[in-house]
Image 1 (cartoon, protein in one colour):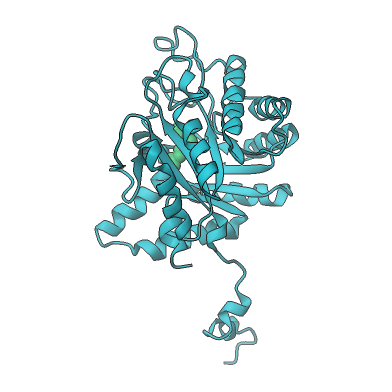
Image 2 (cartoon, rainbow, N blue to C red):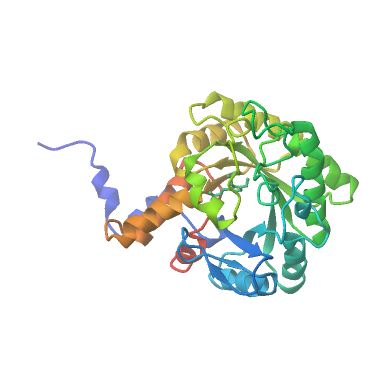
Length: 326
Ligand code: PBG
């Protein structure tokens, strides 16, 4: 009874760290920050315990809190003072995100990423301009090519304000090229572009839509976000974005899509990002609140798994909590 292979020899406390294949550190993480133009105090987000919407004049303080934990990168989401069909507050020079980026880049050393999308800024809640009759005819959807110009304008306005990176999340065909060309034409060759290349139409975004007030007023996002049933299509989406000039390719959501993270890792030399989304965060919090799961251990294992699958960087609402103990 003597096994020839004894992997257990490498599991003692002394040797485990030496043979560990994956590690997680604060420098892998990006923390989402919500800035709200409609409030002058911090408002807790009910569906995402520990997170809040902060007014513009609290944004620098909020970012400094994040940086104190060792996380240096933030991605900004805005809740505008008003919404309209074209989402004009998404690309206004004095928009909530633009004002915030100006402050953060002047007053902190944080690495600032702007989420580029229209759904928080349109009154209908879709990620671009829509057909007039879309409300009554569900086969009609976001007008792709008209939306490109608005996304490009949004990205340039964020870069003008001082964003280090822009991250288009609207799933509009051609958005990476449109944004890259507009950035370059405006003299922002140095601004990096992380594309939400593979973004699924996912039920896991529910808590975020509450947080950012970005749920569609009617219909859903099936006509532009990807079908969760599809795996090969993810490579096609990523290939298009890589060819159009994306610097980083993102998969979203994270944990339910580890196969996709792995596929992109094998197929591309680009850095791969994973978005550990609001529903993934809320699930663990809810179970932990009931005493059914250990919050920190489960969160840590989730993020470690994303890295093991091939992600280089992770956008996560756990960033601050975990960074403190990494
Ligand atoms: C904007 C956007 C969404 C998320 C990030 N950017 C919402 C959506 O597409 O519905 C979701 C993030 C999360 O759930 O944590 N398009």
